[in-house]
Amino acid sequence: TEFARTVGRLPPATDLTPMNAPVRLQPAAKANTLLTSPILPTLLRLALPNVVAMFGSTLVAVAETAYIGRLGIVPLAAIALAFPFTMLMQTTSAGAIGGSVSSAISRALGADNVDRANALAWHAATIGVLGGLFFTSMMLLFGRRLFALLGGDGAVLAEATGYATVLFSGAITIWLVNTLASILRGTGNMRVPSMTLLVVAVLQVICGGALGLGLGGIPRFGMMGVASGQLIAYTIGTVFLAWYLASGRSKLTLHPSTFALRRNMFADILKVGAISCLSPVQTVLTIVVFTKIVTGFGVAALAGYGIGARLEFLLIPVAFAFGVASTPMVGMAIGAGLVARARRVAWTTGCAAGLTVGAIGIIVAIWPSLWISLFTSDAEVTKAATTYFAWAGPGFGFFGFGIAMYFASQGAARVAGPVLASTLRLLIVAGGGWWLATIHAPASMLFALVATAMFAFGIVTALAVYFTRWGK
Figure 1: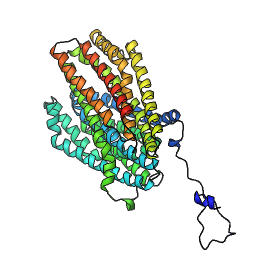
Figure 2 (figure 1 turned 180 degrees about the vertical axis):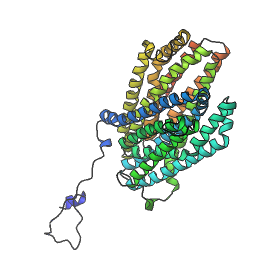
Figure 3 (figure 1 turned 135 degrees about the vertical axis):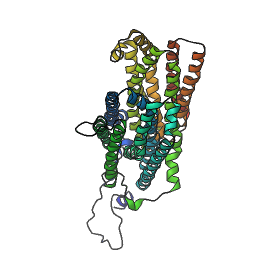
Figure 4 (figure 1 turned 30 degrees about the vertical axis):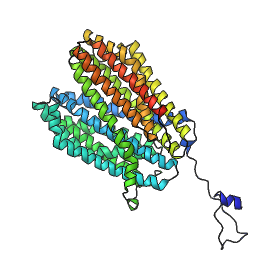
């Protein structure tokens, strides 16, 4: 009896407890399966819902391009101007800060500190609100100037400004959906946030299409209608996730009575998030810089790169799905002091993502027509795209590996190395591209540079994780 009381299986005796009174056994605490289950099957189980959610994002991209195309050439050009900034907002809120939120919460749960995890959830929601306000103020104040710097003028500039004014006025809802989803991912719950994001994507397509094109007797609002549809969908998503977290259905509960802001809680999230934010910024800069360089190599080279880059963008969510699944697994292992398991999770994640994305890259490198024929039959463009896949295709696996390891490193709160690897990729593309342009090298050399940057990104990320000390 005394031994059982020591290990907590029985309630402690008091002076009022008769010696012969019947004793009721308390149920043992439920084991944390993320700390004990086989790594690869658990990773795949957590990644699958994220793949479904990423499918929703792809659906939105295809659908929006389709119905904005029906509005005309000017709206298509306008959405291209706004795309880098909407992408930056999504990747910052869902990836950089979102991954840091999942990391902090999972580390607290791994240490069996539920009160701290609840407090971190409130601080994460606060950061989501502040992040949304920041993007709203920046784009409403400087959006038109930024679009003009990218070359927008006339009707295109007006359309892009109108679209951004509506979309970024409700940036808080986009930030909160991604932040609240990251809170749930930090507990190991991938199903609810993934299904929510999928429903948000479907609602965005329906509402954006109806308001933008004027379907079903609704007035045609054009680009501003498309932006309004996105805000409606994300507002519904925010309300649902907030209700779910407040209802007690999750491992964490956002109850107003527990709301109290503390500096150390913000520090726990932002010590990882602040550095992580550099990665999406560098990704957007890499896209902008490389697109600008390719433009000087001719229309065919630009079109060929565009076809190749479109597949590359579709493969990034696959690596993302593996990466965000690994964040709570790594974080909980770190919180529980299981550093060796955390590292095994990270390497398993990187290899799974690298092999999956890399296999697709090898296929298009060998049979590029499988993808290129979907977009063009022009001989020059086909030749340029084929050259791009011949060089860049083998590098896709290293790129996917690096992205997945970036999220795994967030779980360990050791993200500086992968971010520096992303910086190296940007420098290779920018510096090497400028040099190739000055010597009038053929476009094939530029595509070889893309492959080099991908290889460097993956290899340097692996070295950074290998040599960085994890744990306290």
